[in-house]
Length: 196
Image (cartoon, rainbow, N blue to C red):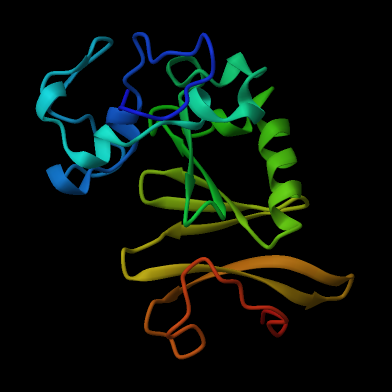
């Protein structure tokens, strides 16, 4: 756990150390989906007083989001998922333990994820499921598996014309793609042409 954020009353990391596995830590060059070498499983950080800034300022959604205050089933050590806010709060990212890649599709989690996607889609925001480097964009009526998303790629959501009308879709594009060059990675492209 880090310093300074408003934690929901009664919530604590306890014996959970899942963020030390599923999240990447740039300062330590620790990739997503692998245990941090400084993690004492079930106990916490072995370098707690000297841990990187990214770790000091990190709080998972389970600890601080009021929308999860009545959702004890999302405790990361049990759910095998760490939920966070990313991209200036325009994205809910669910980091899934690679040892349980389908955890997000199980009850009761899947219905929560779909509900969040409905709320996010109203503002053209993202709900992402991340399993290692693999990313799945979750929309109210569909999921788009983008596979591995490289560090130099951006996820773009958009409205596409389909036989049934407009539908939300997603693609990954290189950051220097002229269609998105100069825009922020969380800004959607609206009215994209129909996918081939």
